Every structure is written in C-alpha cells, then in structure tokens.
Image 1: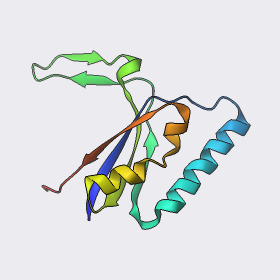
Image 2: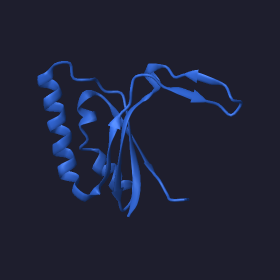
Image 3: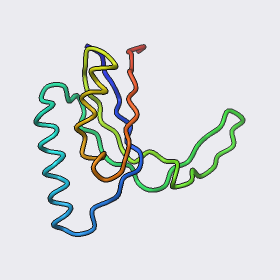
Length: 106
C-alpha cells in the first residue's frame, strides 16, 4: 500500500449553516466509506497562498490557481486511489481533485 495525496482545487463553500451541516455530513459519510484507507482526512486551505521561486522571489498566487484542501489516503495503486477520489464531496460543488502518489525518503 502506498500513500496518495488528494489535492482539492475549486468548488464552492456552503453559505448557510444548514448547507455547512450537509457538507460535513457528506464528508463524514465519504470518510466512513473509505474506512482504513483514510490516513489523514486533511483540511481546507485558506483563500490566500504564496509561492517561493528558486531565485528567492516571493509572490502571491491568484485565487483561481490555488489548491483548496487535501486528504491523504492509502491505496494499492494510482488507479485505486483515483477511484477512491471519485466519491469525494468536493466534486459535488464544482471542484476537482489531483491525485499524487508519495513515497518515503526520510
């Protein structure tokens, strides 16, 4: 089994307390379906981000280009991790998911 980072981009935030509760229920249900595959449920990111370039320059990332959150799952392959990602609630709000395999080096 390998670890995979699910990097969330886009999607919309729930506006009312009722909508937020429904979204949290959807995430809780999805994590329940994934069971032991969930290594780190993750968190959302704030709406601001910066980049540091190799020349030392620092700049703000445009809101349209930033990641909005992450989770880490365990799966047997990239295909399997991608299949797990298909049930993610971020997709129902117009978001997308990038799936990256990680590997230990330290």
